[in-house]
Amino acid sequence: MIPDSATHLVLIPSYNTGARLFETVREARRYWAPVWVVVDGSTDGTGEALSRMAAGDPGLRVLTLARNQGKGAAMRHGLGAALAAGFTHALSMDADGQHPASSIPQFMAASQGNPDALILGLPVFDDSAPWLRVYGRRVSNGWANLETLWTGIGDSLCGFRVYPIAPLCAVMARVRWMRRFDFEAEAAVRLCWRGLPIVNIPAPVRYFRPGEGGVSHFHYWRDNALLVWMHLRLMLGFLMRLPVLLPRRLRSSRR
Image 1 (spheres, rainbow, N blue to C red):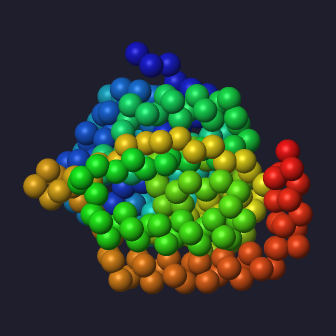
Image 2 (cartoon, one colour):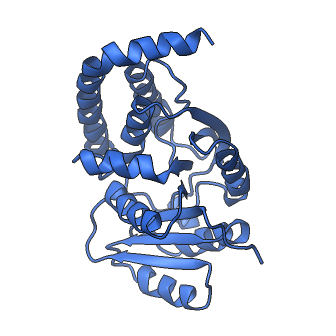
Image 3 (cartoon, rainbow, N blue to C red):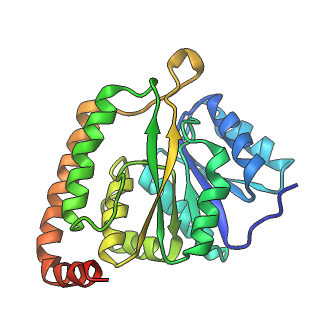
């Protein structure tokens, strides 16, 4: 049995993920403890079934939100509870199984060796990846790198990453946004602005089709509009911070 970590946990936000959620959780538990799941107002019965699973597994904890609030809000809820429980780092992964649980130990080890760093998954896509998603994220990555003066964000949207909890909670307490699909990109940019170093690690990504139990709540027009609005806000913040960010970037480039 994997011993519980006192500092690092796996945090999985879930909304109406269906049966795929249970496989994701079982796989995560194979490689790490503890694993926490935030059930974000799900109406598909997964919250109740997962709570029964947790009753027989001390390494699994389920947090439940009464109504759907969005991925970022679910992460904030879980991160706040983790911080209060004494954890320092959280590895986030999507509930639909597209991220490989077998990579959890590698990412956790990188975080333990670089506790101040933000550990980002660098997606390695296979043929299951929708081309609109693959090419569309390149636009978001370009903006995120501009907003941080190319300080190392390999991918701004990958949900498989390890956060230092305290800095992220501090950011989210000050910012009213980043509560939905915009969470990952804005978190990466704002943590870069705070001076956190970035470590990028390749991570395979698989998109499950509906016939394989895959569930996606991505809405192309709505969520891309949300990303456009996010980057407009971040560009304004970037311009305001440029007198601080530019000298910092110049100093780091000389090292």
